[in-house]
Image (cartoon, rainbow, N blue to C red; front, side, top):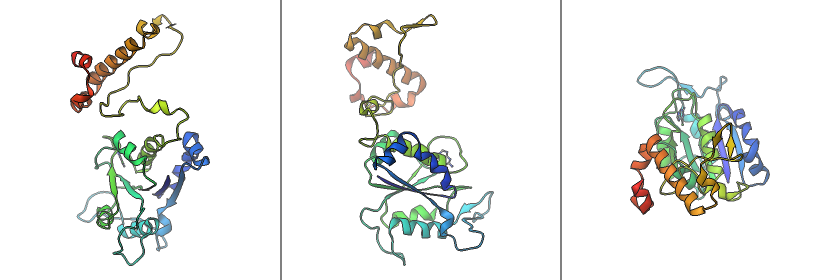
Length: 253
Ligand code: 6GU
């Protein structure tokens, strides 16, 4: 998977060379390139933002700089009007006022060949930028990563990228570790709690059933715990559950 990221702080993404993401790049599974938006400016101050039309606090990122950058990275020829080249990347803008990024989005995007992230700063980017590229036939997404405000899109892009890339075939050492996680599948529940040895630690015992060796009982115990915890902590996930994802024993829980 090829990943381009545009930011006024491209150095931020040097962390992508660490850990599993770094290994995936070394293996050739991932190719991540961070670009500096200011490289597409022409003025002496390399300015990328301007005051909001209609008034208000803060600064808004200018459309002209972004379009020069995105045209080039998307492989658009100028003058504009040419349709999106086939195999054009999915264009993703982090935006606190957009729909929430979910595991479903991560799963879908883990199959893409090429992603292009545009990190906004300040009060955001001119709304015509995503509109324009959508009208050109580009698959444009805007996502928020949660109900809180960050200073810019860089952290949000790191979060989305980690969620996406770990789902790529060959990324994880043990692929089983991603199949039973929270938020996966139709019946997305919070995961059951985990324990390791010793069986008693500081006077606290692990639940007996987990030591029973009865896999059926262990599965039932974990499933019941997942349902109970989800109902308590995230009732919204229970409300969104597909009834078909529940078995007979679940319905009693
Ligand atoms: Cl995607 N961007 C910013 N700036 N803040 C956020 C966010 C994104 N998601 C949650 N807060």
